[in-house]
Image 1 (cartoon, helix red, strand yellow):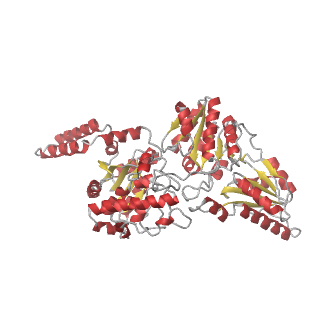
Image 2 (cartoon, rainbow, N blue to C red):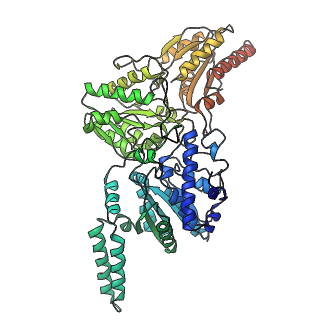
Image 3 (cartoon, rainbow, N blue to C red):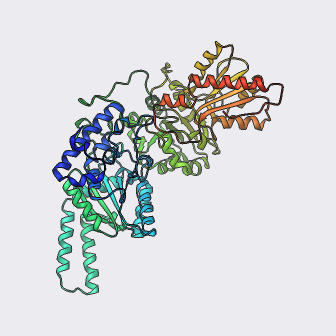
Length: 639
């Protein structure tokens, strides 16, 4: 650990250092981040790219009186190290340790927490407006990546902030990437900004020249202003940020501490909205991350010396199986196309993009647009597949409902990272998709038990005449053999994997295998549970579930989604609709709480969703059933 870093107990300690010492501190911070992430995994490249930026912000501004809002928050590692969390940094992303994102409960310096891009300017404007209404002082700074500018919410906030004229500083961290290289008109615009280093000098020279002309009349002043604007238009077409009401400063070298400090001091003096354009390099200071910033954006453990990633042993990931299956299906059907929101690699669509570049669309961090765009494609006869992480599709709820399901358009939603994802924590757990999708009319919701069933359900979705959701977890598959060709399965038909008596376990997703293991344990105790791969959350296999409810004394439902409104709730609603009252039901799933970061297997065990937990729930339900049998009518119960 570096000597300077050990002496930083809070941001105020930075102000005793000169620029040379700050540069040394930056090197020590990079060393600490690389060492910790190589052991624990995490977001490496984005954090290495903002080390000098973070130091300069805390050097110029006085946090927590001055408030720094990080968009998304996955680039906050240097911020954590400078705000008193060096001792806890080795616990990063581990259960009970530091979060990989900003967390208000961790520190007074974390004033906003988010895991989805595009929220920082809105939050910062709220903080700045509250400051003014409450008669307080201090600056508010929002740090926004150029990838987040593809999110419509960022522009809504910039438009509002510029119109309000509130004293606010927006730092645009421009590294040409979100996770994958940025796309679209905004990225092209920023490239033009970055390429014109003479703009600010010319603007300043022209302003000084005009100010020397003695006592211009009002008309001449207007002419001078128009002349300045003409120069802006000539050198920076549109001057987007100034037209939105911001004073634009930059571009600034995001790895030059002197230039950063000067720019932030200039911004601090202005009593109006200011945008400081900072150009950084993702992965700065670590050659493997600089060479492959997309690979090292979010990464597992690796060899810090060589940059060699830990080899993933075992079966292929669900993501990889999905990507390969989609390519095979698209080879047979020219109308199949694919959409991603800035994550072609993370969603498994890179092979599709290489094989069918004209049918692949990366829309940037714009999930709402992605869904409605898919609806437009579907309405014209194409079969779009929208591949988005479960937690990010939440941003498109209205578009799913209004623009796809209301019109009953055949769009397939491939929800990666569904259920417990682990170390990324609350903002990334895919806990709510079953609940927020199954209640929408016309939507079909499926959950494969393994990677082979995934490819068949993808084929089912592409053959289905309406909206279709397919949700699957992060990480490696179960390891089952893959059939040569994906083929459709009957919609709404579950699969009995084990026959039994007295009690039935109805499970969805890979937790089906935990249910099978639980049944094996219980068989040795004299219990013989049915095990059903329910497969469909909507429509349910009503005939099968009602038959088991009639034959069994108890049912246990299992899902790695929230219990409220999920698969188990659907089963209870079915039983209530058919006035089935003589079977007891336990609903196993995630609680009414946001699930913190930790290892996936440990979190599943914590919530009773592993084999031991499922077996314990069956034992408890059967004991309870025996106690009340013959004394009063059984009732349905959530467990």
